Image (cartoon, rainbow, N blue to C red; front, top):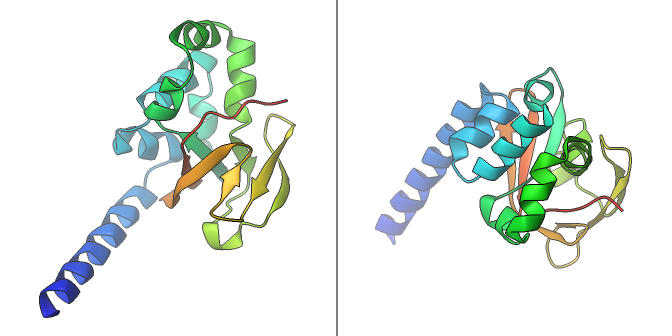
Length: 155
């Protein structure tokens, strides 16, 4: 039991230290450092949104992982990456103005930077549209990242 408590305490301290280290980085740098958002980083660059998400903010980003992007057929993803207007619309649909931490999430509609509304549900875990939130509260200097398992598309 004592070993479990020490392991749990060490994991908690490590998690806190890693989150505190990320807090000095902006959303883009935090996502890149995580290593699971390579496709998102490429898409942000292609859309010309890197500087925006490095800006003052604050922003709440529902960030799809590389695995989430892999659910999109390769030909469709390649076409999306080449269509700057559509790509910008899709990416900004994943961003909400302000910093919304997990404890503050409420079910309902939330307006995105893109202009449309995401539908947030809290029954059986948090979802945004059809994407499940799989990790929350990754702090950045200009907002917060919540990791999602699916790329969401504006209506």
